[in-house]
Every structure is written in C-alpha cells, then in structure tokens.
Image (tube, rainbow, N blue to C red):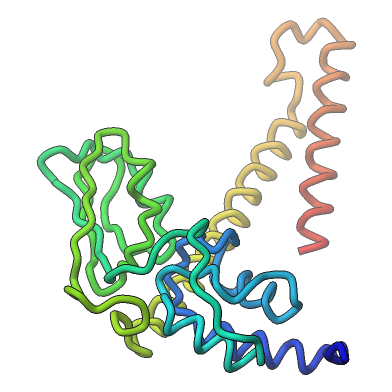
Length: 229
C-alpha cells in the first residue's frame, strides 16, 4: 500500500530533520542550489536520498532512517565520496579579481579588488565552487581529514557553522541588493527632476519625452519590487 501523503507540518518537520542531516557544504553537487533546497526536495519526494557526495554513505544512511527509505549507494552522477578539503590560494599568482569571493557560499575568502585574497580555513567547506571561476588557476584543494570521508570528516559544529555562514551571506546579499536598488532609484529620481539638463539636444522635445517615459517606467518597476519585497 502506498504511503499516505504527508501534511504540510509533517513535510516541514521532515525538511528540518533532513537539512540537519546534511553537512551543509552548499556545494550544489546534489543538483540543487543549496543544502536546504535539496532537503526540501527530499521532504517533498522530489529528490533521491543518494545525491550528497560530501555526506557519503553514512549520510545516505542518516537520510534513509529519517525518510524510511532503503539505504542505496551514492549516485555517481553527483560525484564520489571523499575526504573534506579546504581551498588554498597561491597568493603569489592571485590577481585580485574577486571572482572566487563572489562564488564562495560561506564568505570564507577575504580580499578586495586588485588585492590578493586568502581563505579563512574554519569557514571553508571545500565546496570547490571557487575553483572553476579562478582565471589564473591559483586555487588548490588540500585534504584536511586524511582517510576520513563523508560524515567521518565532518562534525556537527562544522556543519552548523557552515549553515550559519551561508545564511549570513544570503542576508548580506539581500541587504546589498536592496541598497543598490535604492541608489539606482535615487539617481533616476534626480535625473527625472531635471531631465532637460541630463539630456543632450534639449531642444528635441520628443527625445526628452522618450527618456522621461523610460525613467518613469523603470521607477514604477523599482517601486513595485520594493512593495512586494
């Protein structure tokens, strides 16, 4: 007999348990943008329990116990189980492009534009997302757990720190985007207030009207986004 559909509270509770059972690398190898999204998909029956290489076979066993599903091998399409790594930047070759900083899901890379970067090791999850974006190939991965793989290479405190760092980064990105939109809106309102001074060929009334319509439409969209935020 097929299992009864879960209620919304049951699905939410299962999501929370499954998310706690993931190592929180935020590596996307499971096929989802972050660990929480993968946990949500599993809770809703939309993803298999064997798609997390960092958790390894021990992780699959945890997920199986929570979902009541049978233990299965790790799906090789998502990678292989291995030790935990941390990223190491060869600072002599780093050009300060900031691409790795933008890619890091836990803000574990410190640096600024045109200045060399360095990795804050306790915050690095070894997600490998910084590797492909580096234009000078100056980032390597260092094995920090030897032969220990999967959950044997992780602790509850490390996974908790990784999740907190990821959540903090997401909040920062939302704040920065809101501030960016606010600045763009202020600039648009400033131009709209004295459009003739910001338009070449002010004797061309149709051109002024065209630009006014464009700016007003952009402002309307910006205000609508803020109202819906």
